[in-house]
Length: 430
Image (tube, rainbow, N blue to C red; front, side, top):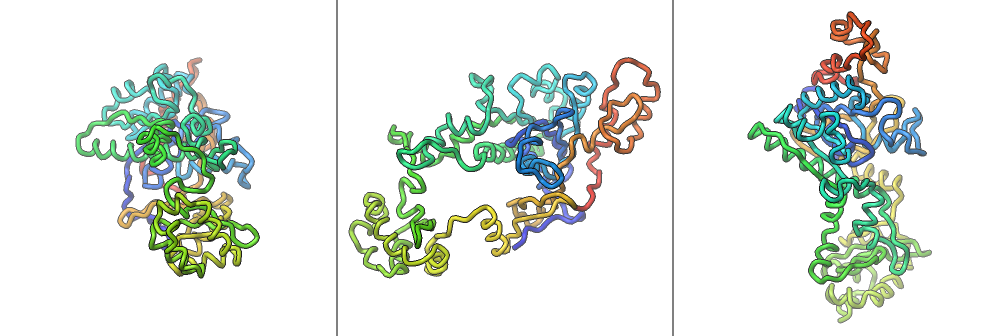
């Protein structure tokens, strides 16, 4: 069924939660976007002029010139540009942190102390704050190491088990470590909010890319710990299950087959017209099939060569054998559409659509997403003496604070935060 989106009268899971998103690139912004999906009011804080690095990470770019990479992790946020090296902007940032329920950042440990935005300072000013720090390698011995997904895939062991045997190590086709860390961060933030709801006490939440990756190696890491032997790359094969890999069909086209038990293997053998394979002592049980994988693949591919992956998918699925063709991204979106999952959602006129949130909540459905913000789109208004960077209408408080602006000292932008952080601000419909 299509994902329901919350009309204005439907309660939101994170209604009234204000998130100050000081993070950039992918893990932090994606975690914040997840909270926005759940109804939080997320304010993305970026450096003036250039903004988040991913604004320029292209091609590809959307038709409006926005990098598609930036769009992927910054939906449904409001945008504010602050120069933390400027005393006035730093004061505005501290005020935003004081009002927020959640602060997400991925600065190097200690880097925010000079601005009064490190966890000890933010929690002292606001004991109910959930301050989430995302790093590459933690806040201890690895605190000074820059954390980028590709590097962590390499040093964290993922590349050593990805690729073909004897071939070069390969990374995953997406910034998988960042995505996994974003999910860990969102989970931890939600747990911390639950604790705060019970006790009124905020806390410092820490996640790092390396630990998120190691926690996601699951059976590969547990196998190493159990045996002391390092796993290696196996291509599309599974180290403990067979057949659980891509198999060649007509013209060598691949079909993904995931047989998880002996019953499914018997159904596969029958659908291939070779029921005797299930009684062959080499293949009767999973551990036998793993031991005789090469012979097994030969027997299966000899029969699969008669048809295309599409034809076999239809036939094997009817026999309850898990399988499917190797789809392109476009074909995967089309499959989800055919299955009624409504995978694509508009975010506004003139903007590229986005992949719909995978979350399904019956009482508090995810909110209809909005286009990612332009740099400083919801920032301070333009006014004499007000350090504004947009031409949006002036908030009345600026007139009060800047009536006498002849001082050479640059005034703080915090005067305009009431408009920015007002949780009742209405979004325009996409």
